[in-house]
Length: 258
Image (cartoon, rainbow, N blue to C red):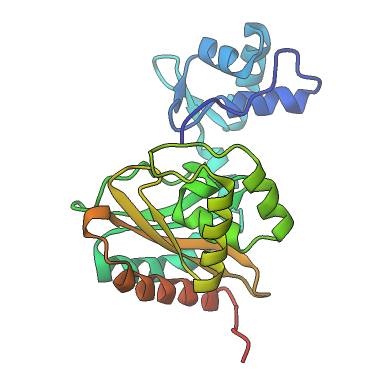
């Protein structure tokens, strides 16, 4: 999902706020920015932006190409690779995601929760798979995706109620925007152990997702498969997604109760 960056207003109170606003100016829709662009999107004066961009470039968080445009630097990728919910989880899950892809040759995704969004940390896609608005690092609201529903359904009742009471963005005529309907979907997801998201982000795709559990049994991620809605055979997809999710969970140390 691309939109406005998480930036601070002009005159942010602290140096860390201003530094983070520079990094927050970059997103999937704006991977390359001029200094002026950074200043505007971060809500900073040009002088302040110049100073902070220089420090970040020297450290390696940003890189400047020959045309003077800035990109996110490899140093940030090195640091991000240390996140336990990022590269480490992806490496553990990848063999099971590959098995799911080989069995279906459809889009396969792995995502974790970040606040009210899901963030995709792996995505496998074939040439003939249905088109999706997903890439590694992309984020979408929880209620609009299969992985998001699988994650939200296993959160605390209080957290679910806060989410259901908040704004529910719409992307297609089929996106869940009614809180009562969302509550019913979450209850059904808990009952069946899988979430079905039908044409919620695009009007031609359907996804089936299942939760991934960590050592203590808490849901730490979700895996899904996305197929063309017109050809979707949910009863066939459910067992395959469940097997992948259970395999990843066991690899993470989860053991189901006897």
